[in-house]
Length: 215
Ligand code: SF4
Picture 1 (cartoon, helix red, strand yellow):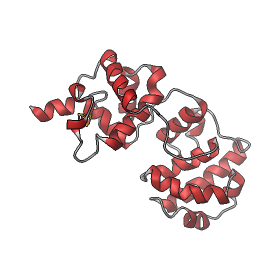
Picture 2 (spheres, rainbow, N blue to C red):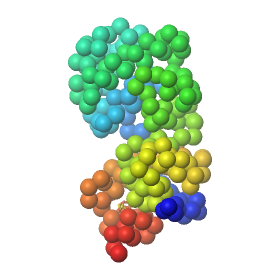
Picture 3 (tube, protein in one colour):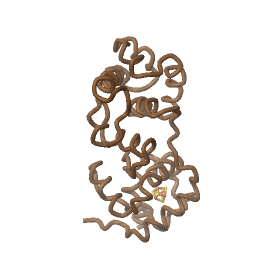
């Protein structure tokens, strides 16, 4: 089994990423927890830029769970056509809004466990919302976090849940939420899926992928 980085080495890596990406926050635009939940559901297999374009108009027209629950899936699908999988997301969002009204008095539940009961909300979405809105320490593993952490050697698995476990093991808990953003930014900026820009990378001396490409 591949050996993971030690916590000490991991902290050195994160310190460098912190300097490079000083504002560890989501790039999704939102004004309240409800809007963040909708934006994160919309973001699956879409870029934050695409989502922000859609939500700029969407949140002008509809603001509350009631507003969304009153739409038909077809009506909402038309509003969110700019993101991938919009037909499915439309159904999830309407169902989630109905659940918020029926079970949570229209509020967003605060724990990952409760969030994951909502339609279209998996562990990643629940982690993002719990972390950004309620300050819960959590590492949401999206495609960037998954790829970058496996390359560096912070994780060693082809399973998302195991990658999250690996990261929680090597990263101190108080850095989980920030580390999630640093790894995303690094994946978007340098450690891209195709052709990672290793020659520009400030953590190249730590990276297992870079070491193995040299050998
Ligand atoms: S050295 Fe290359 S593969 Fe490793 S983290 Fe940097 S960009 Fe990614």
